[in-house]
Image (cartoon, rainbow, N blue to C red; front, top):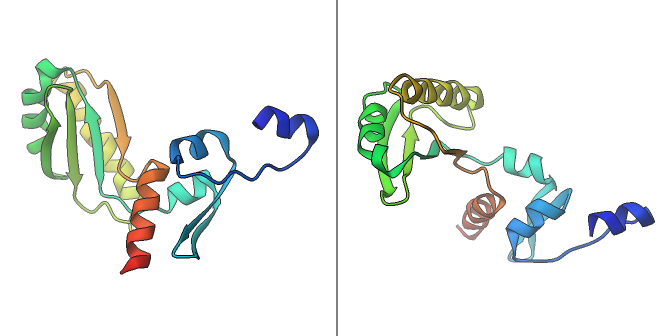
Length: 146
């Protein structure tokens, strides 16, 4: 679709509930809830305005217990949950990770990564909470309903 739009110098309007598709195909997004616009702008901007104070970190399954121990000892980590220990995913809730202090989450993320690296724990994947369009959609539509 992007290629066709570029070739024809045209805009394409795509309406879908498949947010991963929207995220990968579209430049701009409008999120509606109950007929009201709750967010609009570039996909990156809409995702960037999401609130979040957590990280999802995937480590090798053999390292889950060690990673959890290292993360729980970190001063900027409030809680660590092994979401699916057999897949290596850990949910990490960080302290002071709010929209009021957006730079703080990046500093905490760097510290968390440094702690895992210092403990020789391989990091397979790192995602910030609210980093996907579907998470933003859920946050925004939940707020609109309340």
